[in-house]
Amino acid sequence: MNPIDLIVTVCAVLSPATCEEQHLVFNWNGSLQQCAMAAPPYIARWVGEHPKWTAVRWRCEYPHSNDRAGTGGEPPAG
Image (cartoon, rainbow, N blue to C red; front, side, top):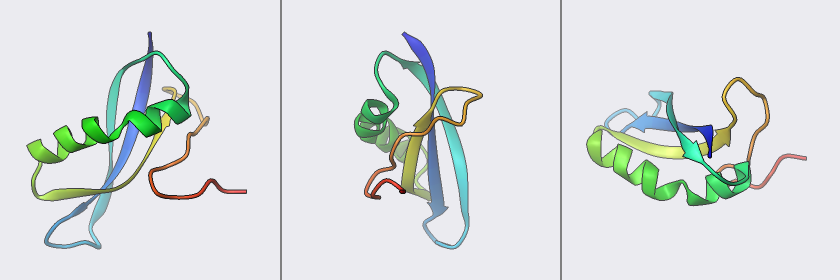
């Protein structure tokens, strides 16, 4: 298994224009696209622990890399 960085953009529930990125690092044995597709349970757990925030998009990256996977609900660029 390899470490992977799940980058989640979260916005404040009471102030939707206030957003930031959260980095959740865990071991993953699959592609970046598979990571992005498997991310919702991890994101739901984080949001459950941080109820003042809501997740609006996410992507997976290898640590210290510019390789990206598609984000939830958004078509790939290009």
